[in-house]
Length: 335
Image (cartoon, rainbow, N blue to C red):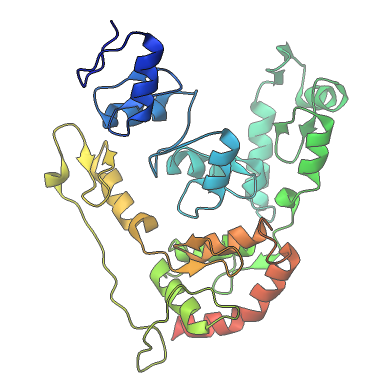
């Protein structure tokens, strides 16, 4: 008779399956009908299996890829490229995408352009989808443009399943010009949320995310986006204690380095400390004034509003509002 690890016996395998799936204390994958020896083993299965839509950062399983995609898109601390509408399963993969994808290359950097053109000329002219080789890249491009099998975006070097999908992509904000300037440096961006993330991540004058959060609270925006009122210091800026965490070799539990806050495990101590210095354990600081969804970073809230998911504002209104607040934001940040 089918038997569960909890010593219960069942007359049929379906009974065992129903029991294992219903018990929250059983490490069981209902989709694959597989029991696991521990929840760590179950989460490893979710993470490594192509059949599951799983967020390894949050240790959450989603019902569909669309749901997982939305989750990544709405969390600023997850590896997601908003410009390309693509999620990545590690920060390294996202960084490689930023470095290598043509859409993220600075169009004003002539040296980079020439280098890219030279590299492209040296690459074999091959269409992997059709398994065909061409005498040069011009012939390959003519094939991609003319073949009914392809719906190719020449800006992003991406193929789409249908002509409609390509048209939707071409008319989306992915191809928006980099016409927004960082108020603190010379870099340009496509979206207000990208500027916010750039400053929060320490990529601009060593400013950290906690400074950005403090300034946004001090702006006292209307409608209110701050989750709680903060006590103001003598200078008028927000006064608060910032808690930072660092792990040592003592975090090694015998098989991996374990976060003592969320018990997520990492292969290296460097990865664990990167996790601890990330926004993963920050408090939720902001909320959408319409749907009340909460965010740790202002870039996450701006990104949420930009998508127009809850209809709080149109994308153009987000740009206009950001431009209007830039001078005040920059002044407070420099105090």
